[in-house]
Amino acid sequence: MKILIVKISAFGDVVHTMPILPVIKKLSPDSVIYWAVDTRFVGLLEDSPYLDGVYSLPMRRWNKLFAAGSVREATGLIKAMRSQRFDLCIDVQGNLKSGVVSLLSGAKLRYGFDRGGVREMPNLLFTNRKVPLLQSDVHISRRILRVVTGAVGDSIEGVKLYPSIFIPAGLREDVRKKMGMDSGKINIAIHHGTTWETKRLSGRKWTAIVSALLSAFGADNMDLYFTWGDGEEERVAKDIIEGFAARKRNPLRLVPSLTIRELAAFFSLMDITIGPDTGPVHLAAAIGGKTLSFYRATRGERNAPVGPSHRYIQASVECTGCLKKECVDTEKCEDGISVEEIVEKARELLKL
Image 1: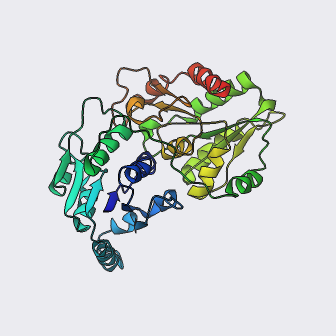
Image 2: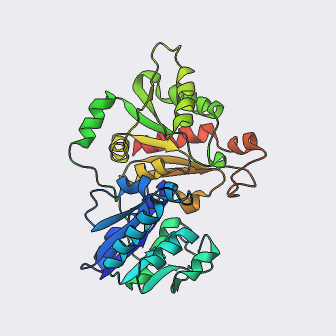
Image 3: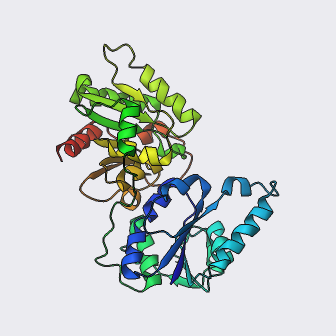
């Protein structure tokens, strides 16, 4: 059976979906699996032993109407997908774009969310097998698993999900040397940035968190590594680090630009990764690392990494989980994330 997975973006959503691959292989050992994904996130799927192919979709370029070569490129991709004669397509994105890709794949059976699960209603026009969610399907991984098991014909109950990122041999050591990492210290990664303003914390708040971590565990006993995704995130990280420059030993480090595979290897070397609801934190969880995440506009019960190696904090304000991308009272909202609780949960994770 030939299967196409459609999960185009974003970083964290693709990571959340990856554990379904071994589930499909277990339920259908002879299946041939392809994945349609945004070009920016192809690196997440490299070296996966469960995939037979990946379709790289340059969505940013295609979003520019009539961009040079876009029509020819898209036509070639459609022909490539249709040539595989997929038996079924599983759309676990649930928006208009993923629905279009599902239809153009040529698969006769196109599974997706029903009206209660889709992100964008037009998606319903492109799938012909709608899988209903149950009230207990709160976490995103469970929602995705519900659609997948509905497609391949088995119950969701008792299905276990495992870390699903594969790091090439030797890459961990290469990254360790590149960073000059001291394995004798507590190594904590901080990824402060994310796309939504309402998921982030300010530089002021991060300075308070870093100060509390240094007081709790000792500046001589730890190194804090700041990762970043774009120029603005890099600038904010540099500003936070510069604020501690007067210390006799500044344990804050700026991580250089890394590929997705290098970033995965880097997180595998960390004792804890701390950050908001963002792809890199979910990546750290996917490689089996310990994570401490916090949630403002989104909900941890839906998105946070699951398992004994993970902790999350939900902002203690009435409007938490609002899903708004702009906030009229950002300071009040981020103050709902307790610095003391972050230190407490970090201490718990370090004891594991």
